[in-house]
Length: 189
Image (cartoon, rainbow, N blue to C red; front, side):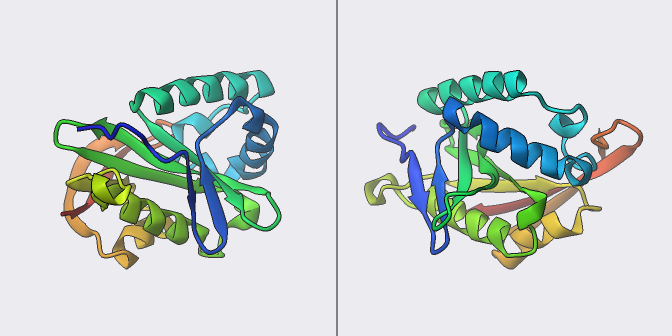
């Protein structure tokens, strides 16, 4: 069952995770443009160069989906400088179970500092914590990634997620150039 209230902001030692807002558009666009070359290998949305109008429209939809509990995206900000670091959150939600999938990307200028691990650790705790503790009360969390994305794969491995499956010939690469497999990691309570 979906909680009556879902935290719009979470904090870690170095980061603030905040529900998306249209006012994030310029910062999100700058991060996407700075990261596009790297993200094109893994993200469908990075195949085309983003525009401010497109980012604004995307954030309007993200605000609506957060409000309805359909998808819970969090923008990642540096707690000290206020700089936009990346985006993460829960998608593929099924409140009947309840369960969700964590996705993440960190802007290229900020990779290599452990931010993706820190964000995913915070979301894992928040997702699996019971609603009485202020969490989402998920029974299952998943992280799916391309086996060729070694950096992304290390996150669930380091956080104690179990490799449930490698789905063979499950999807195509982000640029649709070849058929790829998908790794499915999970944590349950």
